[in-house]
Length: 123
Image 1 (cartoon, rainbow, N blue to C red):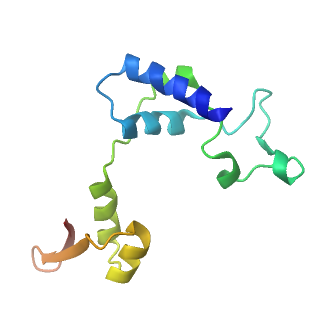
Image 2 (cartoon, rainbow, N blue to C red; image 1 turned 60 degrees about the horizontal axis):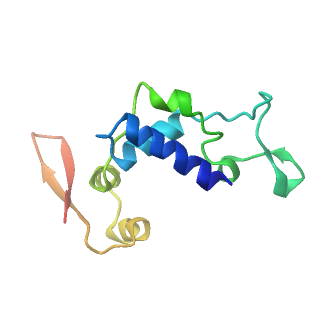
């Protein structure tokens, strides 16, 4: 039942902030989500005998629509921003492919200044 609830909250956010991208809306939802349930206790994992849920089991947490309307800060990162981050980590082409699943990306290494090395995305 999470999908219809989150879809409804996304529709509300889009109507309140029509210029926000899908990434910005996702950021608002995730950065304002609560890792606790409605009784203020940690979210539990029903599949593992109601132990405290790990991040992969609960995601960002319970959606808070009121807080998501005004999150304060949103991350509106594009695919290229993430690829540039990976390039800045000096990943080998094989590792970059393992993460992106695309051979369309390579990291171009440019020297700027005497000692500073800068990587950038080449499509």
